[in-house]
Length: 587
Image (tube, rainbow, N blue to C red):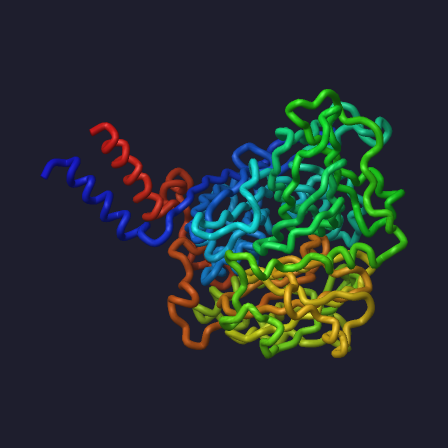
């Protein structure tokens, strides 16, 4: 048998052994600092492969994703995949309770399957307040071709990352919080990493680069919009165009028209937008601050341009107005309540205990989580949930479980707010595998909060102003509440969610507001299958990083060979396969 036939045989063997079930997608991320001036002021930002924002990850559901990360920052790094459920592999979630940081100059490879998910998400660096400096990018999970989509195929996908922005770098912002100070009002809002179009000579300086999105007249596009900012809710709108809401964080929605929609920190939405206007001039794309004093916050407005290919001029005049409801606190909440799950659509969706009828499943655990304005604990300004400010463990939670490290955390997180003084603890929730948990998020602060839970899409069943009581369940939507991973909680209000705990691991439950998160407003839900097996939760990966009590197990990484060693057998086989394919073509 000649060499070509041997290689051909090895090629098909490798396919059958490694890739028969689901294909792989590969990305290389080099994370580094660059200098940029998104608001006209030179500052240090975090780029991926030299780009700010980072590249869009675009995969199909059930694909295996391999992301090799080279950390060229001067501090530890973790990338978190906001809304990606990490089925059976909480080891890949990229937050401090599940992963040791990637040291400076090191490589580390994330490998996980985007199992049974579709939709619009994003990724970001989760440590050291780094998200305030960038490092984020969009994350698209497409349906497989055999799964119908509840709308016609759009002309194209357009990803839009919106978020508030400070001209101080992330280390200065972090120090301000460490010193007990408030961050103050942001300096602006970015759209895809760029500052506002100069719609106003007083509010916007000259020479700022702005985002332009070019479209063809008469065509319909899918706009995937994520609020990747620090703490500001934003109203998104496009001058003269209707936004048809179609999907949110992995769930198809009942399609409804909006002239604008509030997108809170950490949330992602898909809109279908038809370019049905005349082309006499370009159109404004606007993301403006919400649930604030809009007169004072006028500068916190992002402005981009929607440009038709046959446009005859530049956008001009006043920006399209946002909701005129500064003194009507119910408008935004009613808009949020109007977002409903499309229960007739096919595709990936939560499936608690074999039933889509989440409203008829018995709740096994109830947690009422109350946040308050920041408090002083042992001379430090902290934020709390139920009176506890979370202290991140030095050893990741599930790794401590697997390797029998004691004393890393306490399984004693209170189901109701503590009555005594607040305290700093590594206290987590003991979730029941295959339980059905009700979580009530009570916001007793004066500012908007968003909450996110890793590992799951939860059902949003209710929200209202005032204090939640047992009688509040009478208002729950038990049929078509949206399933998503991030929900807003209005000041002086509550939001209720239901979670089917079918994904073992240790899962972060936190505020998405970066300042409140940094100061301690989070916990974890530990979900363990008592009959542990490789079908419900995989063991820790071969390249796991060790820290804390397990630091002695960590071998030093040879920087010169880190890139090749971190890729591992799977990537090596892919390289071999590529070479074989080239030989096949030449043969």
